[in-house]
Image 1: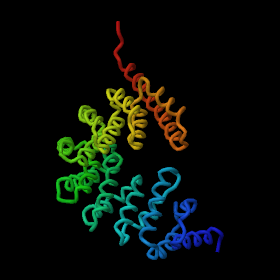
Image 2 (image 1 turned 60 degrees about the vertical axis):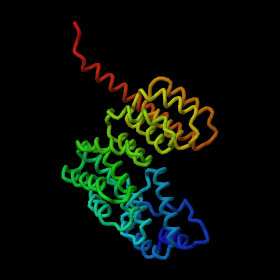
Image 3 (image 1 turned 180 degrees about the horizontal axis):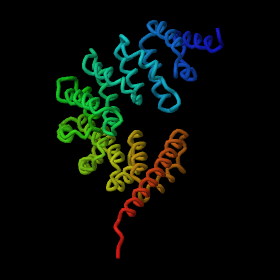
Length: 322
């Protein structure tokens, strides 16, 4: 037995030990897991307590977001049929960035047939990536239509509101003609959760027709709505929102919204944004926040380069003057 196999057995033993936290440093053992090790993992998995399963998968999700070299896709696929709904949902979330079209029928089946709302909602979210792929002509048109039809059916159906809202957010990527009406209807519902989901979907639409709706909600007293509006303003690169976002940066107390303000401004760019972000970096005393601001400044570089390229391309297309 090799040293690597021995170590993996030790990792599994620790996983089964409820008396100690599962060390973060062992998570890499589950990345790109070999078939033999996956079988060993699945043999002990039923003996792991559900809270520990959920904690492990949440750690994988967090670590995968921090380290793009990690991939828990093979492990997650194996857990899509787990008997516990929270595990199935967590497995789907681990696959949120996996663009393998073979997952489409799996997610569609979960969306239509899973007995629990949490996996259905997770599947609705995961299908958004394939709507985007379809809009970019990276998957067959028939596959895109199947995904869109399923999401539209859920939105207009009788499933739990959480599932329907996740479907609405995913359909935001779609250019189907019925989508704007759905987003507008959700936006005006007297339910903050639906308004927030509509704003999230508007941000995904690449359509500045929603500028007024997004900017109106930047001043919302509801934090979920305000967060979604800030995010949408960045995704749509709404330059008229820049002064509002800069002013909000001075006053916002919610940490999630404050971070989203920074990132959205890096997506919009323009006057004063770099100065504000660099001043924030100078006064920050939190290492994690400093890294985030540095990433935002790097994204601002990309935004400004892209805007400069667009300007040069526009100038090149101008007809010559006499």
